[in-house]
Image (cartoon, rainbow, N blue to C red; front, side):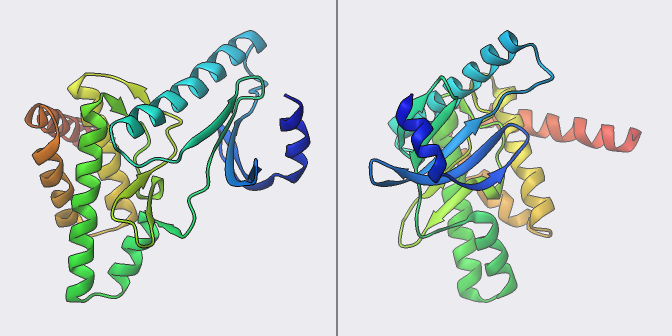
Amino acid sequence: MAFAMEDSTKWCLLKQGAEARVYKTEFYKKKTIIKERFTKSYRHPSLDEKLTHRRTNQEVRSMLRCRKAGICTPAVYFVDYTTHCIYMEEIENCVTARDHVNNLLDTPSGESEKSLQILAEKIGFSLAAMHNVDCVHGDLTTSNILIKTGFDNIILIDFGLSFVSQLAEDKGVDLYVLERAFLSTHPNTEQLFKTVLESYRKKANKAEEIIKKLDEIRMRGRKRTMVG
């Protein structure tokens, strides 16, 4: 669309990953983040277009599904399926859970410990709410969780690998990905992740079945490690 091409000259590149570029700009005078899925030259053009459209569509649907369920995600302003760009709300005055946890771990105290426990509970509750509407995030890390200053809830971002599934296996994998990312980024926080799971268990539908799958996935992971 014409306005998108004109606005692109004012886009400020924030980061580029394997699948997309992320820009900062304004959209109708609102501070905006744009996620652009770019063309993969190694794929056949028609296949690339089909896959990119599907991923863009699924990402937007997942965010809207979560917001409808009361889970905090950035508001989607506009989707351009021609350029595969998602225009969404810029979350101001926030930090990633990754940075927040590291800061609390670097300044140990009773207050820091309490803050970590509260955060772990909020993460567990939010993931349970997400799985209750059969949304699987696909890339759960503490970098994809935001904490806004003075805000009671956490904000989930980057649904680029998300999909809809009712399977306990898929939800167990989601938890396993977060656990691996959590413990590799924040060593010696096993007890903190247990709090995440305890909170998850209180709110998630079929929680025991999902956590049982998580245990099976952990076991398979250990076997692969031993074989390797």
